[in-house]
Length: 139
Image 1 (cartoon, rainbow, N blue to C red):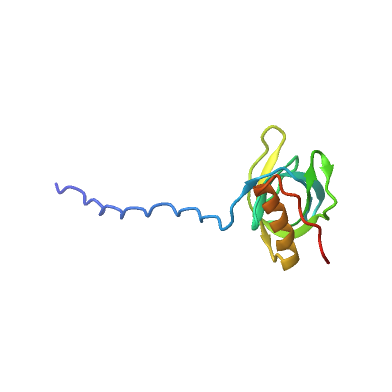
Image 2 (tube, rainbow, N blue to C red):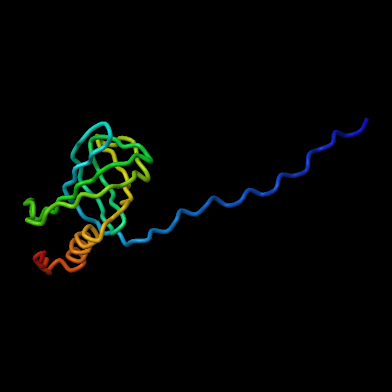
């Protein structure tokens, strides 16, 4: 009796794709945020911020790929700064389920204007140098 033919070995699987490297340095910062989706509006808090996006924490979940508007409010010592908030559009790149009554998500900003880049630059430079006082806007 002939031995059954075995199938040729499968080619090795390619290694999992590496996660793309971030383009912008993230800084840990807690800011008040307002999230506007197609279905609701709610408050959140940032956990980090970069020139390209933000990590947010809230009591409501978001869906990967969802388009949102995000309002960021600079708060120092529990007092909202005079600097007007940044409103920017974004896409939810990842979202996690509820843990301890909190949801987290990563938002990549989209269509950032020069004025929005200026706002982000001010905030991020102030975080890099906490002793610095933000320069007043000259419009």
